[in-house]
Amino acid sequence: MLFPSLAALLALTGLSNAATLQSTRRATTSIPLYAYGSTANTNGLPVFYADGLAYIGQTGLDSTNGTQTNITFTLDRSSTTTPWTITANSTTVTFNETLDLYIVPTSGSFTQVGFSTNTSLPTGAVTTGFGWYGKSVAYATNSSEYELSFWASNTTTTGVYGLYWNANTAVGNDNPTGAFPVAIKSTPPTAV
Image 1 (cartoon, one colour):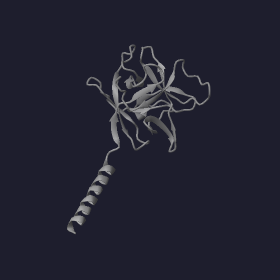
Image 2 (cartoon, helix red, strand yellow):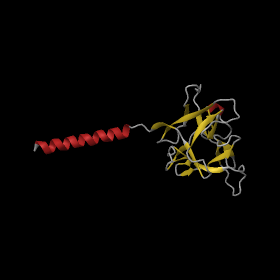
Image 3 (spheres, one colour):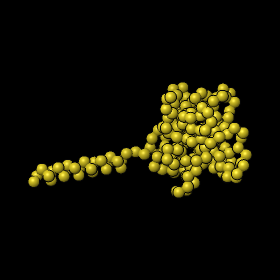
Image 4 (cartoon, rainbow, N blue to C red):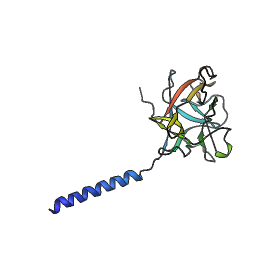
């Protein structure tokens, strides 16, 4: 009779340890993000930083003399109240301060997504509320309402798009010509 009770005790201990490991696993992660759109050649383009703004594309902007770099987002998958910060994926670029992802969700706006410190945000910008709707990045306006309003807009560099948040609510809104919706995901593109 000692063996069945010992086996049961070991099984319970194993379950207890698994539950402890599961509950202590950190929700914070560092990941790159990618844009997926309906326009040709926009599936799986990485989100990158250029002079405080978000862009998507395989190459940098031709027309900037400022700072450009691929980035990694540090985020808490279990919270929409924690800002998503960025880190440069470069040995030659470092940020001297903590930069948070922001959008401007003001009704009627079509504003480029950017990165800033909390002390220098544009009017109406928010750095919290980001979460996941399935595998796509979403903005939680409240605990039960998520918006997926990321758009891409042409730049002067072929294959590079500005990443925008579209808070236009009226039908027939005034989005720039050629702008199109994109999903932002942590899923890297697959090789063809």
